[in-house]
Image 1 (cartoon, rainbow, N blue to C red):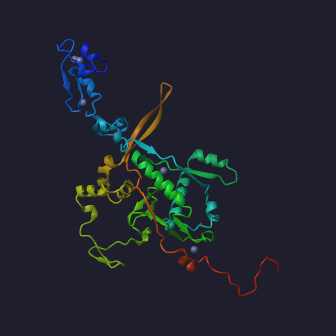
Image 2 (cartoon, rainbow, N blue to C red):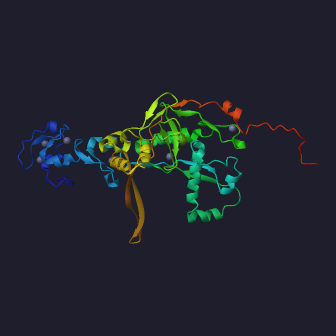
Image 3 (cartoon, rainbow, N blue to C red):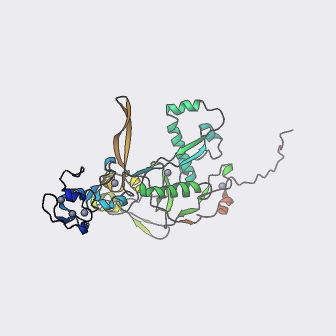
Length: 375
Ligand SMILES: [Zn+2]
Ligand SMILES: [Zn+2]
Ligand SMILES: [Zn+2]
Ligand SMILES: [Zn+2]
Ligand SMILES: [Zn+2]
Ligand SMILES: [Zn+2]
């Protein structure tokens, strides 16, 4: 008798494995008929072993192996392994670290680039520095970190920043490559080409490298604290103009943009859902912030496109420490459409900037002046 199944398996059937050679006549006491799997997986077995087979049959519909971790998917057993790549509950948390010298208000005063502010946030190196600063400001409110900082002598320690963002398994490798290798790795002059007089305080920079797709560029969202890709070439938000209702605008290239008759978020729910299916996770995060209705549309897609993140809590039961899931959250990761290739294209030329750079002024003296400070 099989111990997994509740049904009684006949003595012969229990040991009969080579069905091709089986010639036993089913008597209903020690053996039974040989049947084909009703789910058409091609297997043959003694009928009393149907239940046992259903535990192995590749055509049986089963829940995802991460069902306990919150994945709601039901699929054919043979599809389970493939599903793991896109399973919303198979989440990878990025462990990438980067460092920069400890930044305090004092440092920002001394830093020649101290004038940077949100108007420079389309410059990606500054966007990341601002993100790190916000992160730092949050951390230093934590009492444990405050007490550690009290022990730090005057030398400047290095701060380590941890990405720690959750991604679906299939999104992770592109996140790592595009964000940490291509973007972070390119910030020291390769992606953003800074004016050679940056040290003097010039904030000018040129974007040198863009995703290969036409009109695509890298942006940083300070709401999501993440890099992303947009299909709109202008990365400076001040260039976006709202078109007044019923009016048309003539573009510099001769094209005309007319205020649409139908507002985007007034489109039928199913149409919006359909459009949103083509949008990457990073954009869905941003889009969901635009209106209540759009948020509902995005919310309806979260189990299809998002990830399931669990919060764990530590509790002591009978003196033993246990970890239990305290809550489960569906959310969209910050993954953007993979950038498989980059193109090199400078927006203008640095030499054009240098002709007008305010920090590139020759110091011409017409009157006597002190060189060494002696009279
Ligand atoms: Zn047999
Ligand atoms: Zn049997
Ligand atoms: Zn089967
Ligand atoms: Zn799953
Ligand atoms: Zn990361
Ligand atoms: Zn300059």
